[in-house]
Length: 248
Image (cartoon, rainbow, N blue to C red; front, side):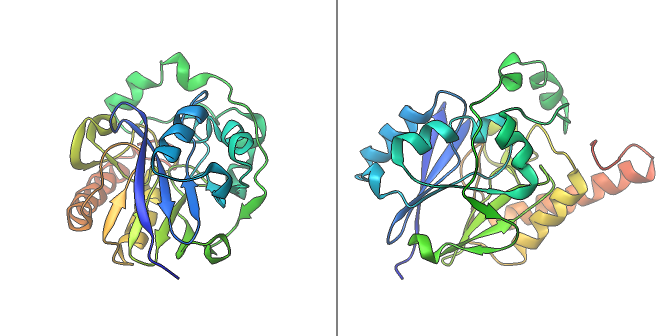
């Protein structure tokens, strides 16, 4: 099977919110942006010479509104099945994110007041239910869906055989992608320690690049150094009694 090319699809700003187009024997889309983004994503996909009818699968990385907001719309526009992890079925089926959002720092506390985070998206039912590592060979892609819980219970990433990791919100660029190439937590994590453990598991697989939901691609070595600092920060907070499973 041919190697996979990873193409970022900006949904908001240049890099603030990204979906991804993965090109192999057949194209696969990862994430669906905010509500009302389906047509924009479709136009960007067709600009890359892809017939929407050829899309084999739409993978949703997790149950936050900026990643599954247009999943149902994109499904209607392409006819492609939707894949999501069983642990995030609640948000997918209700169209509502589990609340409260749990900030990782000042940016998250500020963003939690944004009404757009609390809107209801159109619900959808994944036809491909992810429970563990899942090969995408049947969908024409040399890649696997990898469970990476922590950001949400049902967060997943996509790892290509060439080593590209499409990581959702496992890691981000600083300030929602405004500071490029600088690793940082996204604004929210349900369980920061579990998320860090998932990130370390993915780094142990020696990815070549980490393609994120917010910002530009990250260098794995730079993410490893960040992860060591984050491990120390979380350990200090835990020792001080200021860290629980759903707070940072």
